[in-house]
Amino acid sequence: MAIFLILFTQLNLTQLIRANEYKSDPSNTRSISMTFTEPRGLIRTADGEIIAETISIQGDLKRLRQYPFDNLYAHVTGFISFEYGASGLERLYNSHLSGTEIEVRVQNASDLFLNRNRTANLELTLRHDVQLVARAALGNRSGAVVAINPQDGAILALWSNPSYDPNSFSSHDLNQVDNFRDNLLSDSQNPIRSKAYQESYPPGPIFSVITASAGLSDITIAKDRPIYPQVGYYVVPQTNSPITNVDGKICGGTIYEILEQSCNTGFAQMAISLGPTILVDQTEAFGFNSELTIDLPDITESFIHQPEFYDPNLSLLAQSGIGKGGVSATPLQMASVASTIANGGILFSPRIINKITTSNGEVLKNYQSQILGRPITKSVSEELKAILSKSVERGAEQSVQAEGVKVGAKVGTVRVENSTTTHNWVIAFAPVANPEVAVAVFVEEGGSEGFYTQGTDAGPIARAVIEASLRLPTSTVNEP
Image 1 (tube, one colour):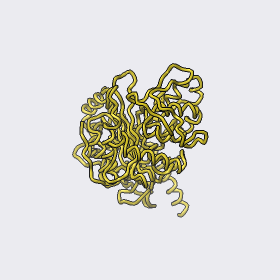
Image 2 (image 1 turned 90 degrees about the vertical axis):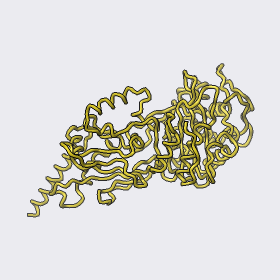
Image 3 (image 1 turned 60 degrees about the horizontal axis):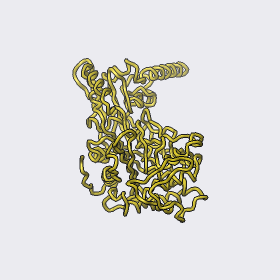
Image 4 (image 1 turned 180 degrees about the horizontal axis):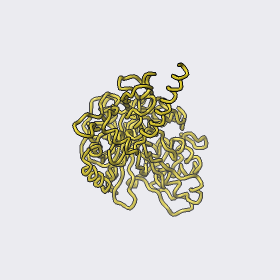
């Protein structure tokens, strides 16, 4: 009898595993149709807001997947569609949400013999209050906002505009779904892709924190001597290519001074002095040229050329030192850079899942932070934090200053190639002494050539998100 029970149990377990492999595939038509006739787990924020749920309705398809906050979390939850499958977390965690994952279906021995409808819920690291502020602060401008907890890599906000309403994909009206999808795909702004982690852009002056970290880590570069001349332009050796400062300003001095002043000429010279190997190695240590490990699909890698590319291209090496010359970064990547500087030099894998629970609240899996590396020492981190906090006190970064807390920040404006417009960036963290939030803000084509906003456009957005993250009195954000 005991042998029979063992064999019976093994047979049932094998059948469950094989069924799971088939049913959990979100591209499988039967799997998707089952989603509209059976229960499906919830997706919640860290502060308890339900952002994806399944409700019971009348009709052949007994269930309807709903997203209560419309476009607010579309680039995180993704969608589930009878006709087009699934995307985002709905796709990556389909087996947990649908209850086909073995650890969800089999929670005790009796589950091997009974066909129970069990589902699991996802709890995210995102905070609903911070996400709302990120959306409101960016307003109708095209761009992205990312906020991270520097102490563990947990993502507090991830917003990209334009976005889309995933409810239009989960509708049972297939003609309506087709029309919505066609309109979405024909939109030149490509709202189905997240500008926060699926698109990359030249980081421009904010990249100088990486170049500066390489310089501060290199014993051959004097830190305290004014080795960078006070100039308005710099001609790269062996070329006729001048690199100019914003608005033609004259600047130079020590590493500390050129970072505080956003001195392009100084960082271009530093890149040449460091050489391609050191600059590229330092940049890759921050996560460039590798996919950030995060539970979201289709992550775009941030990019810098390999050292050998620069051998005959000193001009591009100098440009790369100021975040141009083919360098590109996602806002998620630059938020991760800010987080690493803020926390003493630890590069965490950005994390968007807190835990997976049963429908009864029992924890099936807790997600822990992963350390990907230590790009800089604690002493270099402290030096950078000191400079970036001074910039907020008396430089172009003043627009980032939050109410009642010390902030470190770097702003930047990048001319869009073959255009008269500019992109605007900010990276920031607070409080400086013991940071709890690091932010990256990207405003796409937020300015015009010849009018460099120096953070006046993106700075208040970062400030509002910092204040929301720290639960400080919310500042007024001027909506465009």
